[in-house]
Figure (cartoon, rainbow, N blue to C red):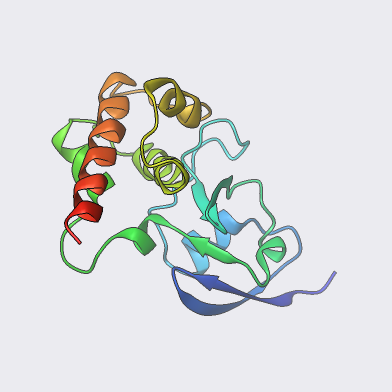
Length: 162
């Protein structure tokens, strides 16, 4: 099969890439578009380190053929990071010691962003459920859960300050 051009929106910008059949979105993001926050972990969909948002929903980019994102909106960690400073989720992860080696952090943050976008006041159980499928081998899950709870409060404060 021949390569083809795939057009999609990446972090708010129209993007076109030439892809070979069955090339994963993860490969395109990391190797073709320099979006290296999307990590390469297990390459089998079991760790969550490659999680990005597709039309606002978390997906495992290591399993998703890049051709399948044609015409859609992809958001990576780079896309939520302000030019100056950190997104409230990133700041909460930092302040709550929810980052050690950092390998799982982009996926954890993207899953958490999707959760908070659709539910700005999640219960602990909803946070735990949202994080299911994202593995952390360093930090443990308690600081990550606390970081998401903290980010929810920060985001509420940001919305109330408008």
